[in-house]
Length: 469
Image 1 (cartoon, rainbow, N blue to C red):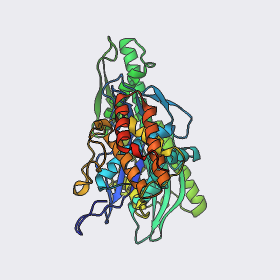
Image 2 (image 1 turned 60 degrees about the vertical axis):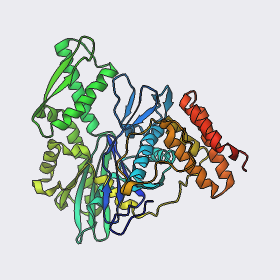
Image 3 (image 1 turned 120 degrees about the vertical axis):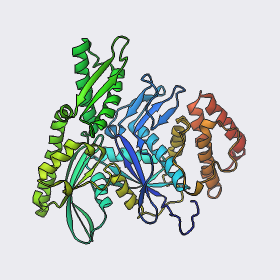
Image 4 (image 1 turned 90 degrees about the vertical axis):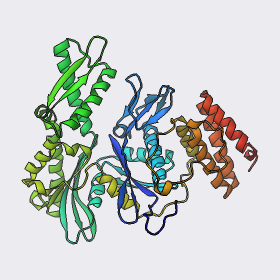
């Protein structure tokens, strides 16, 4: 880790990750408080024209395949297609975690091997198992899976007196609510409920359906089964949805949906609120269930709630806040608005992460895990510049990585060199296994000529190690 003087923050290299359906956010402890890393990562995985995996950036055009909202697919047996091959949901999630790990290392100025990751409170064991697998594929030691409402409550901090909060966490793809007690002794969950398939993405789909109906009425064509058209409208819907948080009206601009159809679809905030009203009502029904559990077990009812705390990006919608205030009979000041709802869970995860000692390396021991990690990293495009590192961060590459290594794979070569270098200090069988796993990953990814070139460069650099036992 980068050395700091006494006046500089010393970042704890165990990161807190809010693994969201729409965006992923991270925080690290700087010695005084959790710091949210700049630039949340969109939860999007696509490929560029060269066939490389691109993480966190929407496709340049509608012809490129894209996978978004993978959080909702975790725990399922669905197969998702990119690069001419099929991926399981944990592998797609691993691409996100690999990129998050890279950004965290650039920020703290040293290696990061450990993380606390949030999960929907209503997620079952299959979803939790999938996140654990994704963390392993990303070479992250998963120190704790933290339920979203607990993360939000932890972010509020301890109080000198006991308070009761209603956590209302409406994210891009999941909804969680909990009644929690926070006081000098920490956080206690009194009642909880949620729906892993309810969130802002559903609001986007309502707008998509509305736009398609308008297009059918005006242009006499049904485009609802055209996935490329739906994807274009969905991206525009997401942008206009955000706009309606501050404006009364907006317009979806949809040029050249087909060779003969271009459309502009006006949308008012009132119409949008009518679309999402059933979903908001469903969320309030789940809040009622959480309150019922708190009343049955602890005698805490609706009148016992001191404040409502908003978490999740979809809680920025004015209608959601208004419905919550009306539900509790509270004034505007009784709904916490001083903390960014999009950062709350990441802050809580960062606070929990500081309780864990950082490991010296990834501790996973499943056979083939390293090879799988290196294969996924080799398939990824050269990353865009990361947020600036503290004190300049680590050197770009460790000595020994071949200078002729292709630019797209320098990060992969660096990772291999780090693993090999660490293994030299320990057991020789670990060194040999690491080297052979990496070569196997390179060969499996052929026929990309850059991978072949990288493999030859590494073989020339490290080939003499093949005979080690």
